[in-house]
Length: 189
Image (cartoon, rainbow, N blue to C red):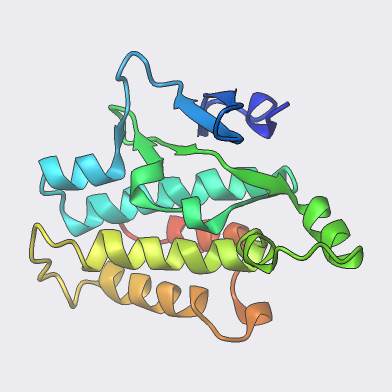
């Protein structure tokens, strides 16, 4: 059973999985048959959102990750990308979910599970780092537009938060709860 079946679908894109016996792999089919969502990638390509709108979207992303973490689930950090995040018409975020229960990561490390790539990418700290990377890409490195609002308070706040998400000391990185609380104090007008 997929974890995505028990999570609130206000935060995730429902998935359908099918095992491909011939290639011995699990194939995913998105649950977006009606086309009611667009990926953050598509949104950035097809529009020219202002910095404040981009930051609002990143606040929605943070809320989504906070919800998933509150369920004691971590995301596979490789999937915290603009192509795996979807927006509805109100710019509410849903994520194409791929993750593990946090306790599984702890158990796997105790019992010597050897896939360090998977284990390293499925931690709260790696999720925070991936969020910071996504935040930087969405708000400050969009190739389709030049963002020149460098000295606005939200720009400084965002850069500072991204820096904390990328802290080398894993324990000094903020939690997603901390990220959401801080971003909610920013002025979006």
